[in-house]
Length: 145
Image (cartoon, rainbow, N blue to C red; front, side):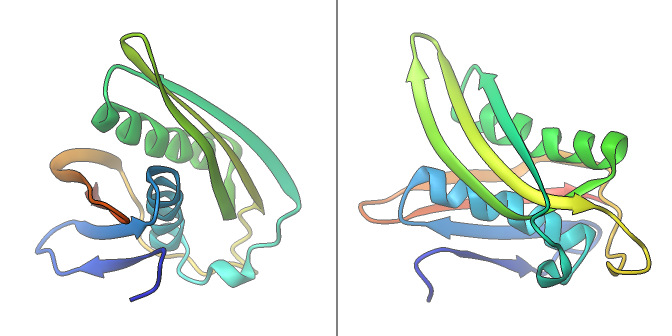
């Protein structure tokens, strides 16, 4: 198994994904890429022309994951941007909140260039699990379609 990546799991009605990485930041990055791959399956067709900085604050690590991914849905819905490179640079606990800083590179979605995948309506907490092991972090998440 690769050090970082994601795989789609069987689910009857929604899209379920397991993402992993050596660090929490790597696993979060892979989870965001799995969302992009759900929206448009071939990430190699996305050129890194636009750089977007993302900063999210949440009350716990689960809310941080939910809010981080929801930000990508918002950016896709409002700005029509999709990303092929997503790097979470920092996840840090500050007092009673978590902070995430990330950089995403991509471009405007173009139906002539990018294939349409599955429309994601929302990120869900159902089946969400974040498991931090010694040298690996795994995230299970479900996208409502």
